[in-house]
Image (cartoon, rainbow, N blue to C red; front, side, top):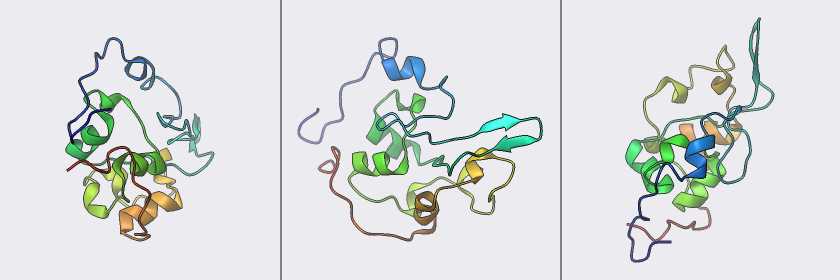
Length: 139
């Protein structure tokens, strides 16, 4: 791990196990705990959620801060993202992407079947502090 508030060194994407496998894995498993962030499957009648999703978009600079330079290949559940970040997410951390729009609820998109934890963060509820993660001391 980097010291003195420095970002970790760049990873070689060709050698990164996550970069080679994460994108192709069904269900978008969290890179840290393995929980499916987009659980469900498609049927001829449309998508069917098997549990609540934690599929979202945060601002690029924040994502790169917690995942490193090849993090666009990764998925993180809200809990693991907050652990890495060392704090709770706030509505300002999320982009204006449709995936974050709470008007889409339990519709034809698997990501619209959101977990209560994700909905709380998008709305700005549940602001209790979390234990510092590995990036908690970074500026």
